[in-house]
Amino acid sequence: MEVKQIASMAQIEATAWNRLCGPDYPFLRHEFLAALEQSAAVCPQTGWETAHLLVFDNEKLLAALPLYLKTHSWGEYVFDQQWAQAYQQHGLAYYPKLISAIPFTPCQGQRLLFAADADQTAICALLFSFIQQLAERQGISSWHCLFPKPSQLELLRSLGLSVREGVQFQWFNRGYATFTDFLQTLSADKRKMIKRERRRLAEQGIELLRVPGTEVTEIQWQVFFRFYALTYLKRSSEPYLNLAFFKQIARTMPEQLLLVLAMKDDRYVGAALSFIGADTLYGRYWGCDAEYNALHFEACYYQGLDYCIEHALARFDSGAQGEHKISRGFEPVTTYSTHWLKDAGFAKAVAQFVAREKQAIAHYKQDAANYLPFKRAQ
Image (tube, rainbow, N blue to C red; front, side, top):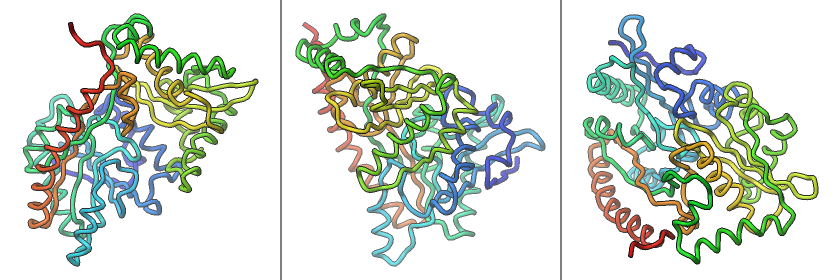
């Protein structure tokens, strides 16, 4: 077996890459990763340098690993800035580092892509050896795999990596036929709260439209992007993604996009974009031009729950953070990242840190579960 490194998605055929990753998880599709590059959202100038690894047996593609050379820690959603500061205090360079992740996307999924007949254990060992050699040659401090699918965790753990845990809030469809069925599982006060929030949209004269990606117009994409950019500009920061990125995925993977638009007095006042997986809806980007009562909850959560119920999707992954989701039926789930640091002393310190942090995460997850709105068993 041979490892080959590529500096662009253009160096691998879309059909070959997609054959490994499959259609279930939209963010690993060749079309998505290529759009990040071709729109220049991902490039050396933004601190994301493509360095994907491919494993071949003669001419046959056996495996792939998404990989980026990073010169900062922005857009990752697993926070290691304190580690970087510790390196600096000891006169060492934490950057550049390598990460296996989907840029700007804190959604669990495959990180190691294999052909059906591949020897996964042997390939993992080969890839890890290649990464270690690369780190030695190029002065790279570390390799981090962010938000891997839990089923791939043992493969990564077998390499001796430190495993770090986090918490997100996700909604699970337990066979609901209607949104009302879901509401019936909640305590009376939370059920009333959600009904009141949904009612307030109508009271403000706001109508919600769900538009499949195949039907979104050019004007609607421009409207959405303006709202998306506003969420960053309100915090005096620049958006990670640009209009060129959204236009490209609208052309290349529209069947996995869902746009929710909010309208008032025949004008758009807000929008939310989600991605559709095999059994999961992924809520990703949102924005509005003014603050309307409960608009965020409706556009970003309740419309997504409606869609999951109507299309029998098992899960709604609405992204990182957001404790306000708990009272609306989003349950705490554990997320993972794995970490290898070349410096033995720092590797030991990080291993000790994540072990302590794991205990705190477990307490936090349990505490969050205590606030779930579901009816208590009698």
